[in-house]
Amino acid sequence: MVLEGFRDPQLAKKISDKIHEYAKEIDEDLLFMHVCGSHEWTISHHGVRSLLPENVEIRSGPGCPVCITPADDIDTAVQLAQEGKSILAYGDMSRSKGSKGLSVLDTRPSGGDVRIVYSIHDAVITARKEPEKEFVFFAVGFDTTAPPTAYEILQGLPPNLSLILSYRYMPPLVGSVLKSSVLGIDGIINPGHSSTVTGMKPYYPDFLETRKPEVFCGFEPIDVLLGILMLMRQLKEGKPKLENEYTRSVTWEGNVAAQSSLDKVFDLAEGYVRGVALIPQSGFALKEKYRNLDAYEKYGLKKKGTNEQFIPGARCGEVILGLCEPTECPLYMKECTPQTPKGPTMISLEGTCKIWAEHRVITSIKSSKK
Ligand code: SF4
Image 1 (tube, rainbow, N blue to C red):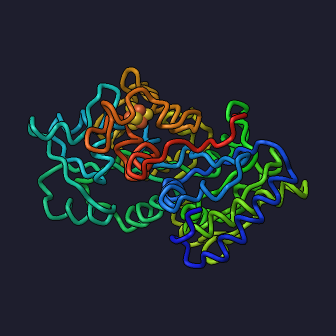
Image 2: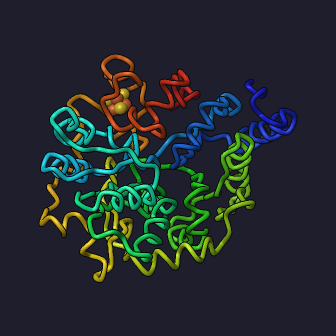
């Protein structure tokens, strides 16, 4: 057992023992999913899977923002860079490849002006400093990164800055994972960061429909272990709930001020989640009065319909969805390594392939029955 990484190894041992006790009582194979790269990092880094019984598996699902950004939007960013617009992007987003195997960063050798920023605020400052240039901010992420962008829009963006908008709203994505008969999960660990903004409330309708255990969870290894115990207790007692382990951050209502900024700027619309599907109400679309800030609108571009494409032979889409493990991809640690990443899940810091490669994880499956 790997208990050294836990602040309180004795408590971790107690929780792990209880999980084993419940697993014996339930006596079925259980498949849990989380949808957050930070949770996968915690699980892999601290060896949380080694503390679980053979019949309990925790699998990584679609929660890495760079990985789920549609190839369509990457292709558009590439096109705009090739046409002379200056692209402002997060580091790993700038390296994620679109349908033709090109990232925005790949346009640099032929003159593309691609700059790495850490926030929308960086993008605003950069655009203000060089008013003669046209800048496009590649806005990706979930409910955590969308509010600062809403705030900047309400303050007023410089006229030479527009957005490729790829923000996704997590509750409908979690709902689609819960309802998926292909995945067939028994319960889910909900993401702590984005739920701090959304609160638990928007998860309730899908919970009522599926009646599958859900636990909102923090990012310490003990949080994840406790979250798994809470899922198992719900199953053992036959009482599924929306339960909150991360009470120090997540509330029922969430961050109402952030939600208010989002509501003023965005409507929810269908959004493509790369590797998953087109999911109703999962995308943030600019309201009519801010539509001129959309780079597609500003430059008269259309979506290209290239959402699903990955490089030939790769299993990135299945890894994002949680249908296959990185080690099952024929390219894993051969053509595709952290030094030579081919797909988004190896490029992104939050991608499952990269996390597994850096921690030498072999599988999340212990039971021979799976
Ligand atoms: S190993 Fe590379 S190619 Fe294979 S799924 Fe992961 S990122 Fe995609």
